[in-house]
Figure 1 (cartoon, rainbow, N blue to C red):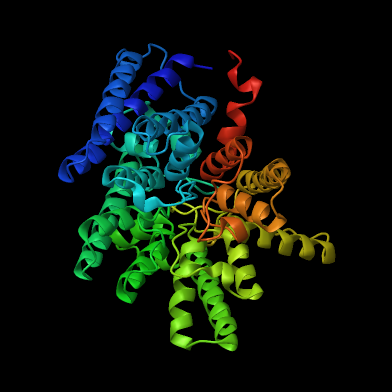
Figure 2: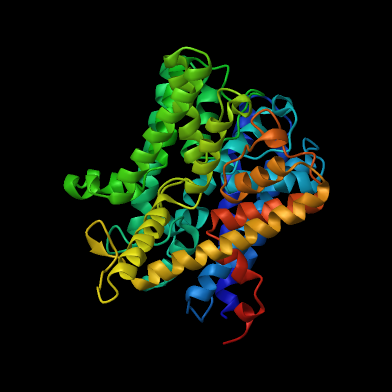
Length: 480
């Protein structure tokens, strides 16, 4: 294990986050708020500490998968601790555990909150909550790869694979730094377009920025108590569309930009993502309309909620906790499916479910024709055995963590639906669940122990489980 390179990168992470804290500081200046001083203070301390840690580049520059996983996991923990300090120092969230929960929920783009009344927060704190979504959506280390030469050659791929969501990550262009840069250009451009469209729909500028940052990162922290229910249908429709778009594999947009239209529209995962979305919207709309209401009204809210839950954003226009059992079941199912790999969305990812379905189909075919040899394919290309194996191990680890998490938080003696969906909402980085943690509820009633369990789930879900497991494994930290 190369400890010096890990410390070097942690220092760079602290410096980058400290610079990003200038944004809520500027927000505080614009709205004449005194609490901006805490971002300036924490940013100054973080930058100074980060500089001393990383001012001298290590002589040993070797960087492999083990260092990559450890760096990513530790970076997100450091990122969250430093990001939580302004909440604590300002006393807007006086409990460190609650502030850390809120910040981890922000950076992991979960959107689960412990705040009973979010509207009491100052503008700079509201902006920081939403900005953490945007930072975490694409990944802070991917951002650093785009602007800094952190590791030489192909070694940076270990960082990219550990932080990017999905069963596999490849290069869009030959150089990994250019890949990261292109991803962030697409990410930034789409965010700006959404902000402009919301402002064009007469949404207040501050609201447009915060909600766009949240939907771009598929996070879901609202700045009003009712999430986005009080906004106009046009504004809600814009958010619906962009939540859906940010759930698409960014390779699709890159292929469009370089005019490889056939390759873009031939992506199997994107096709199934669209199909699952449309089927879920139609089923929920029919279910709601069969009970009461106008079909177009139900279609509007079904389209929004499916887009929000499937992309794991977590915004809400209605209290879907009051929907019929069938509709709520559909929402719980798509909580687990999630968005595409290589997007800002969470969940298990559509690509993994495609692999699982094809594996089952292959096994059934093998039982009927034992001598047949069939290769799993996606987008017309063979799926490597390593990818299938990784997807299967991911599922096992996911089920184990999910099961133990439900058992641990059940010590608080809340009902099963609350516990089950609380874990589902955090490990899939969604935000709201059902019952006590529904869209009109929050996570404040859980004990400190349960909150730390759910914090681990949020980090594990965002980092695809393995980095968080490896950082706690003693073998990871052995010399060589």
